[in-house]
Length: 296
Length: 319
Image (cartoon, rainbow over all chains, first blue to last red; front, side, top):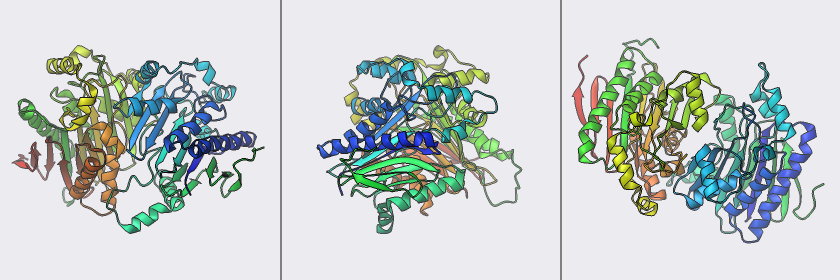
């Protein structure tokens, strides 16, 4: 069952004309993460590689292709976490870098802190030799069009957000049974400057499966934890009933059980395990093919 | 303001903390006096029928004004000698929450956090965006010299030269004088608030646990309200506030939930800290694994307070 990687490209309602790009994007990212794992790389290496691919892909709301804040600028959030040590790294409202997830990993590996924000995050990037990129290189026609549309006084950015590619993320378990996760986003469409969403906040967008349950819990709870699907569905149902929110999750446990679940209309997701690529977009979809086949 | 039926058995309770760390003797009295005064502030709000949200904001504002604590005035300095403040406030009734991180030179970050919750459609604003928002609602910035104490500037100079690695091993010895409050009002609504200047000599833009929902604080009418203090990076790794709430959801007492969660944090990530908790029915606890934590609570017109482990002193408040 090991290793395995699961990737998502955002939960929402994705327009038909963008569906193909989202499916091929998450599949390519899952494949890239899987190659890292098969080559003996760690789960952290795999999730960072997978999410880096999604950040570089202009079809997703992360890195290049990020949505714009109310001023028409790109501010990005990212998060990584390692189950072995519960080490975490995050950046919020960071500007002018291509791969916030890699910067989040540097926060984890090279500082004694868990999160750096805004100008502080940028200063740190500079000190690490991370190249600065012009903001223009991260902005697509599509994101600019969406931003302009949502400047109108009667616009509903939240609703519009659900119609765009959302936050991206990946979870993985490597051959040693160590799990890791990574999440990255350009945030909310037309958000206020400096708005930070759930992505860089540990426990919100990303968590190590099972972490919320303390040690010493009963066997009954443990068996529930192993049912990734049930746990995910239960959590999504709670979010819907309590605060009327829709979303999606990808999970994996140290034994390689994984799930990709969502309460929104669609979520672009892909998983790789035992040399098989799994993927889907609409509720109930679960396609498989050999990892070596080229996705048309 | 909610109307309060004095015949209700439900009691309004407020608990505050002024940070969990090895508080030195020369700060001990001022810390205890400070939390007692803040608890009384919160209590006055509840007594006249105010909401739990109003009470926690009032209590934390009192602590932010008090330069003995590391929040608002008296905040610690980052590595460049600037003040960057974090705060969160959460309403257990709606799960509404507001937070600011790395806001500069704001006298009452908890009030700015509340404005994020009530005046925007967002939950958190950071850095320049947070300051821009403050300006847009007429909240003044305060010059750094006014916010920073002589004591803090001296400590900052002293610590500037320590190797970070050495400090990491003794996170229980660091100053973690984040402040916070939790309350339940006479309608059974709970709320929490946490505010801090962060760790002394932190990197520019460092965000700790305090403004992060589920870590620095959490409030839910179905289980309770929590505010945490201690080594921020450790609190984040175990999402301490949410962990305590999870135990309460499983039926444990507020005291046991806090103990178990703090122990887990100690065992799993070698982090020390403290937490204050209140349940919708008025049960409360103040628990810590550091050497000391300045805390105070008002419950049924009795003022409780403590500093050292197992210390529970009390004073009757006049009606």
